[in-house]
Image (cartoon, rainbow, N blue to C red; front, side, top):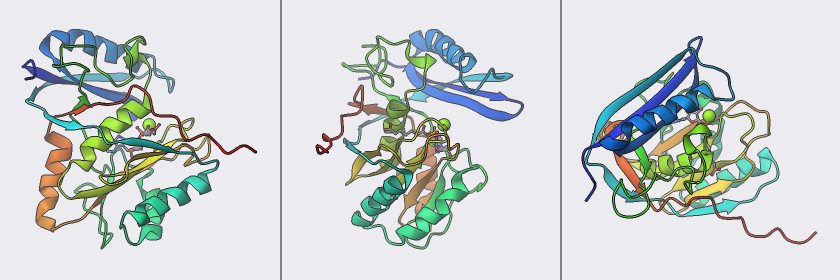
Length: 267
Ligand code: WAQ
Ligand code: MG
């Protein structure tokens, strides 16, 4: 049983109204002060610059749903074109129709803070707010061991690093992707970071697991986004959005680091 009460600690930093960084954790009450301080330090140390507004919000997490992390595999690609083609191929093999149209819609996500929620078959957009998109929130990696008090929590890994000071793209993304695939009606996700220096993206589904694609955009490109693909009756959409935005989730078995891709063939 988790050591209750647990709290969601969220940080959001902006400069001149523009988003700079954000992060969140779910921790026992006793760790809230330490985690809030670490998230504030992370906001202040962000490579994009010093924010002029940092918000730390602490809310009761209730009794989080515990789900396993999606299995992780790495696909090695050399160029953005190759990576996008691989993403399309994986989605198509997973039963997603109209993949080229979905990939074409991806550019419309670039300006959004959240994800596009797209009907996988009709390609209707289901987000209530199209400019913002849908945000998955209230999630963290479950600490290794029995309860949330057992060890410093995982995203970022081993505990040797001052974790919250640097964004661990992989650890945060596997938590988000695992929660998203647990949402009612979600069948797949595609993600490209908006961090200009981070060219690795992924596609995820229950059957594909979390498939990292080492190069899915060119280095230096600030455009990124996410699409959550939904399949089901319209009446399920509110449940899906509520789960993504409100249900606290702890993801178990998050690997400290992604696995190495299969060795490249000798040239
Ligand atoms: N919920 C929904 N959409 C989000 C969220 C969220 N919590 N956070 C970000 N987005 C959307 C938003 O449109 C961003 O522009 C876009 O996703 C990319 O977000 O295994 O860093 O935080 O090494 O830049 C993938 C890791 C890293 C791959 C992805 O995404 C790997 C990443 P970013
Ligand atoms: Mg980013």
